[in-house]
Image (cartoon, rainbow, N blue to C red; front, top):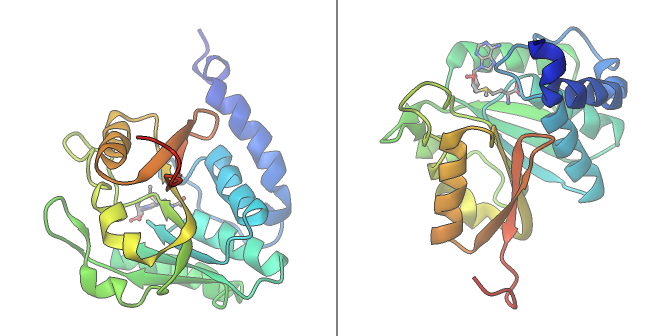
Amino acid sequence: MNAFTDDPRHADDLHAWQILRPLLDDGRYLPWTTGSMRPAALVAVCNEIVHGRRTSIVECGSGVSTVVIARLLRQRGSESAVVALEHDPDWARLVSELLADEHLSAFGRVIHAPLAGEPPWYSLTALAELPEVVDLLIIDGPPADRPGNGLRRAPALAALESRLSEAAVVYLDDINRAGEQAVVASWQAMTDWIFDIDAVSGTARGHRRPADCPN
Ligand SMILES: C[S@@+](CC[C@H](N)C(=O)[O-])C[C@H]1O[C@@H](n2cnc3c(N)ncnc32)[C@H](O)[C@@H]1O
């Protein structure tokens, strides 16, 4: 058995690297790690920005995704930006430096937001710096990969819903994990948001339930 060739995600990600190439070639080295969003997930988000003409983007959990999205917004001549919440001050500084080094500060910004509460989520005082109206919310933080941390992203929807425009969409990354699946199930049970799972990208895409759509 070959763990590389037997996992269909690798083929999807190889394809995604090719799709992302114009954005990867448009800047400096980016420190991709296993903590980074998978290329296939980043393609799903970039497609949403292009197809959905998303202009006000908030990301929970910064990283190379923040830089790639900022590069896309610059390439498109957009007047919009991605604003990322980041709990780790060192990581916030590093991602901010990556953005500044590429003169991307008009297209991407990181807000240091320490975690607070239970489950620990970004401090509510930091949210005051976010745009008042958001049409794309990407949830890829706080980290939720350790045992017992699976529900750490659950507070995101309630905390940010008042900023989400009527036509806004939400992407939750890592939907292959039991914790994120439980988070989506709870959102669908307790809110008027419905989610579609995309197995190729490993994301769940949510939007408000249309008025004529029964529960
Ligand atoms: C799932 S990661 C977010 C990844 C980000 N959206 C991306 O695609 O690059 C969640 C958190 O892990 C931390 N993190 C991500 N990449 C890291 C790295 N290479 N080194 C250290 N911490 C990292 C950051 O605190 C980040 O907010």
